[in-house]
Amino acid sequence: MSEFSTDELGVKVGLEIHQQLATNKKLFCNCTPIDTDEYSIRFQRKLRAAKSELGEYDPAALFEKSKSKTIMYFANSESSCLVEQDEEPPHELDEDTKKISLVIASALQSDIFREIYPMRKTVVDGSNTTGFQRTMLISQGGSFNVDDKKIGIQSICLEEDAAKILGEEGSIKKYGLERLGIPLVEIATDPFEVKPHEIKKIALSLGRILRSTKKVKRGLGSIRQDVNVSIKDGNVVIEVKGVQQLDQLEKVVEYEAKRQHGLLKISKKLQDVDWTHDDNKDRKDMTELFKKCKSKIVQNAIKKNQKIFGISFKNMAGMFGYSPYEGIRLGKEVAELVRFFGIGGVFHSDELPNYGVENEDIDDLKRTLEINDNDGFLILAAPEEKMNIVIDQIVLRIEYIRNEGIPIDTRLATQSGETKFLRPRPGAARMYPETDIPPIMISKNELDDAIRNIPKSWDDSIKELQTKYQLNLQLSEQLFDSNYFELFENVIEKTKVNPTFVASVLCSTITNLERNGLDSKLLKNEEITKTFQFLEEGKITKESVEIIFQNIMNGKSQTIEEAMNNTSIEAVDESELEKICQQIIENNQEIIKNQKERAIRPLMGIAMKELRGKASGETINKLLLKNIKNKLENK
Image (tube, rainbow, N blue to C red; front, side, top):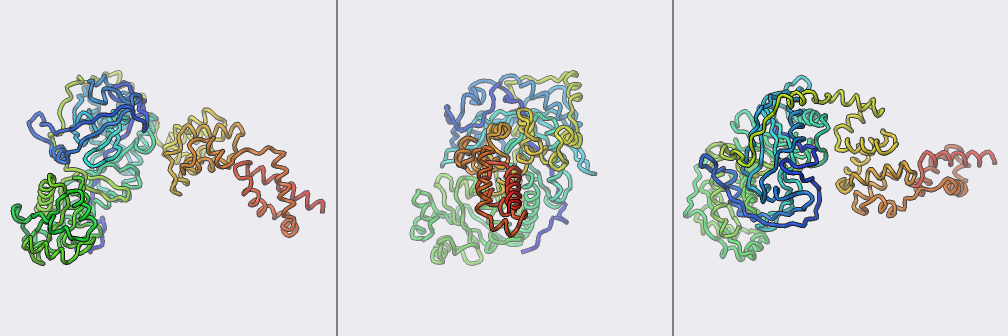
């Protein structure tokens, strides 16, 4: 197994940023997006691939259709209407959305078209009730600078976001419609050569330009990065979708470059072995043969009335498990493809005996398939109606890797930074004109207005934050880049709490609680605002804010009032606080006798155990110190 480095591979990267716009309306109707799990409407659809205007099927649509999924949609009348259900034509394009997209294009010096033509992009995975996504090309060209590097803009599109996937149960795929139709801009950069560690800074710089408009949404899911990765000898560009966090980007680029270079090595090795597969005799039903197999996976498949097939490949011994780099194997590529069809997995000859499949099972399989130790094989469990489709796709993929090297896929980013097969790369047949919406004209006044509204640069925005709220540079940058900037301004507008304290809580306290495994999605903006209002009214102390947030983020409470009750937080009045401090002094006279005024440190620890969240540390410190001095003077 070789050590891997990207230095000599000539890695090229192109970014596609998908940013939701903060219009509080959807692109082609007046519905307000509301994040909810309460659904009063439910209906189902079966989507199919349709031919383009040229009479061709898009390969990605055909491949998705082969999964034969039934789509179940869940909707709430407050956040979606008949437009999202595809029971009513789209309304006119939202004017605010158009203005924001023109400002963003102007900020990136992109050439805006005077006539914009809405298009339909075929999508049959169920994420759109219509079977297509509405999109329109706003502008082309432009650039932005990152340090000394100029990053070119390829195109800027305005489109509607997809429905939110709720999960899968067997052949049923579930979506919620509250997100479907939210306007977003898609910004595609030119490809650029880059070290993996530089990609995060480039994406961050582009995100900062968007946030400077103050017209884009913030928070997890409001911005998504797709990244296109290629290497010098690969001759293909692989699109990786769904990078939610900037910290993933470096790992995704590095892994995908490693995977592509590893596939080229696997391709060369496949060309050196004269392997064959005969569709008629090299795949056989092994269900009866494997009824005695001790593998739980095999037995569970048989209980579900699935078939067990053996698929042989002559002269392929060692090829499925060959790993040019750690984690890169032909067997893994096959397994990813199989999972696409909703099938749990596949065993290959280079990993057996294992998983309950014993030598006796393997010997029986080899005899039935008429193969020897030089040959490779797969064991696949699947419903009978899917079996030949899946095997055909496996054979086609192995042939493609041998002949071409890197399959032209669309892949999905995982949390670990790896990528997995999502679907084949769409072709030109995917896009065709939208017949329900007329062309959209852009007037000179609208162009002039967009140029006048180009936002301040990131540096100027940071300076403004520092001056307006008296924040230091580091906290200003953290706040601007965080998901809480608009919330911060809302809190400062409604309360007189110190801006530095508010920013520190939003940027540090919540982040630290997340690092400890707590869920910030449970902490609603209304509860955060209410917490600072309670602080201003003297109902809680600064020290109690973290306790309240922790209690909500670990799921024990939903509201600040519940958290206060569950953690016994209640501000203590000054006379009661005085009595508690005096009692602590009386109970710890020996410490005071030995340490004099230095006794304040251990006594503060004792006091904070009892009073944390009920009084400020500063007040407790003053009262203890006063009582220590009195005790010493009296003695």
